[in-house]
Image 1: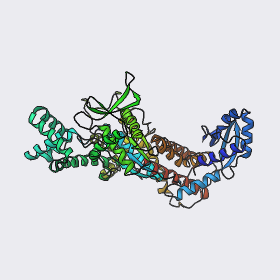
Image 2: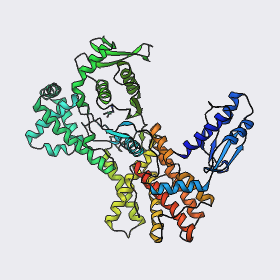
Image 3: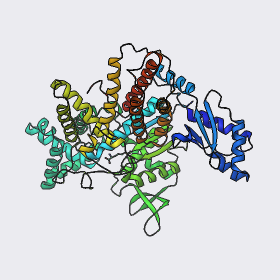
Image 4: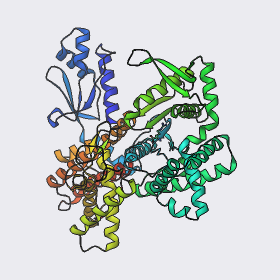
Length: 572
Ligand code: ARG
């Protein structure tokens, strides 16, 4: 159990014993050191409900409160706050246990079967900066949930179906005949552009493209083979980006829109059976009372066009059915741009009504804001084009390499290249993951690559600093006892004990920035501790105890950064 859960449980019991069983304990980490380490703020609410004096009730609660072995001091403050000072020996015990355990002493919650769907680019083109946020936020969430002990399915719902693919396949045939297909496919942007030019200029080509769409959907083996070739090349492009980004998506996680092709007619007939379908000007539509048009009429969601074609929503309905029926998931998390919010709210509503997803399967749209350039407008190239993701990442690596070269010219080029990669990629990811995902943020090279402030380089550097202590402390005893006496030691130990609570909060609300903030907090507290409490100059038990706190700091930083998909270095 985490400290927060433990104290909450005890305060809750004390409230019940004092006659307020229904009042929430409202326990949280103290907002200031003078308020102790934790505070319970539930007494005021309880007193109000019971119509009694809050301070008097607080006294009764404290009299019943059993925190033996956990707290060394409990006191009432202000109108009835309860301030809790943790017992240093208790904190030391938690820290020792965390050091001995590969998972830092976390106790897994009831495991859930969770799908995190993320990245999901359209394969017609190369990945661009618009795919960055979903890819790294989703990956961080998948890592945190798996670490907590959940059974995590990563899903890459790639766009690999629809009319564009007829055009691309037709163009592939042409370029293959001309013998330059592999060359053209090197650059999918150009490939797409050239295919579009052909489509627009040649009636005959356009007809062939349309014919291919029909053949594709009808399962024509020959055309499917061509399509597969295209998809394969496109996925290789994605995989190169994932590897560069240290993102754990591979082929096995891909289940594209195409895989639901055969389910689409079933989706429509199931909607019909559920009495949800209407025909409106030839199209099949589900009307939702919950969503209103500007004329205050129920909004219609088209699931099949007049010409028989299916839509984005129809595929998503098929995917939800599959995720429930075949995978039996407890929770499905969609990490997709916030601008698709209405799509998902409508999708989820239809799924509940049609019985595609029972209430026991949570459906969550985890949205995010826009990545902006320095000008405060959506991130673009100087000429206003979309930035290829792979080019952005290469620039990050190159910039970090230049920085490292300035700082550490004596390192070998190979070492500097490696550091440049780890720092550059870390900087791009952390700049994103350190902000509330719902807000837009400005992508700025200088800020994210700075060694000061809440950045990846700062945290990576903090980690290497701790490692350098251990290079000097050759007498370090990994089994030494921890003894906490100084305030800086205690503050660090309290924060280190909050790792699991932090991860729980990340998993619950799908907010990776809670973890970033936490790691930054740990790094800051470690600096203070390092200044106030000499490690290498200390001797005996004190020296060993401080080394242990340093070891747990390093382990927490490394594990936490790894959960954000960011690597650390022993030296930089
Ligand atoms: N391929 C879509 C796009 O690029 C994102 C897919 C999101 N996931 C979903 N299940 N609809 O916009």
